[in-house]
Image 1 (spheres, rainbow, N blue to C red):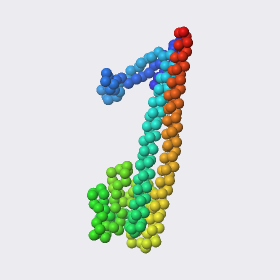
Image 2 (cartoon, rainbow, N blue to C red; image 1 turned 90 degrees about the vertical axis):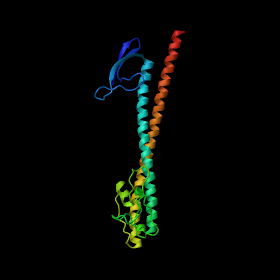
Image 3 (cartoon, one colour; image 1 turned 90 degrees about the horizontal axis):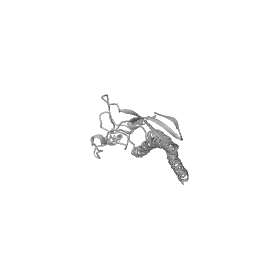
Image 4 (tube, one colour; image 1 turned 180 degrees about the vertical axis):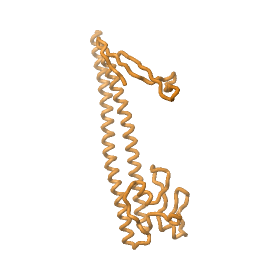
Length: 225
C-alpha cells in the first residue's frame, strides 16, 4: 500500500510499507512468523515516479503471466491425458473388453502394483487395466475409474453383452471423452489468447516507462545547455 503527495517543484513524496530484508536479501520475520515491515518515504521526480508505477504494473503482469502459464500447462496436460484415455478406450473396444476391473482383481493388469496382463490368463483380458495418465495424479485407474475422475457421465460397458451392444456402450463413453477434449481445447485457446494479451500489455508498460525516462532526460539536457 502506498500514498503519493505533491511536494512542490515537480517532486512527489511516495510513502510505502515495505518488507524488511537482511543483508543477504532474506525476508525478516517476527516472533509469530509474519514478515517484518517498515514505512519508507521517498522523494521522486515525475519520471522516477512514472517508472516506479510502471515497474509495479509490470510486476503485476509478471504474476498474471505466470499464473496463466500454469493454467495453460495444466490444460495441455489434461488434454493429452484425455487423448491417451481415448486411445485406450478404442483399443479395449476392439478387443471386446469391459471398462472396469473385477473387485477381486481377476480382470486386467495393474500398473500401480506392477502387474501386467498375462497371455496365459484369459480372465485378465476381459476387463480394463488399471493404468496411469501423465500429469493426473499418482493413482492407477481403470477406464471406468478415469471416467469418474474427469467427472464424466458414463455408460456401463458389459463384457458379456453382445458385440453390437457392447460396442455402442463403448461408443457412448468415447463420445463423452471426446466432448470433454473439445471443451478443454476451447478453454486452452482462450487461455492462450489471454496469455498473449498479458504479454503485450507488459511490453507496452515497459516501453512507455522507457519513453518517459528518455523524454525526461532530453528535457533536463536541454535545460542544462
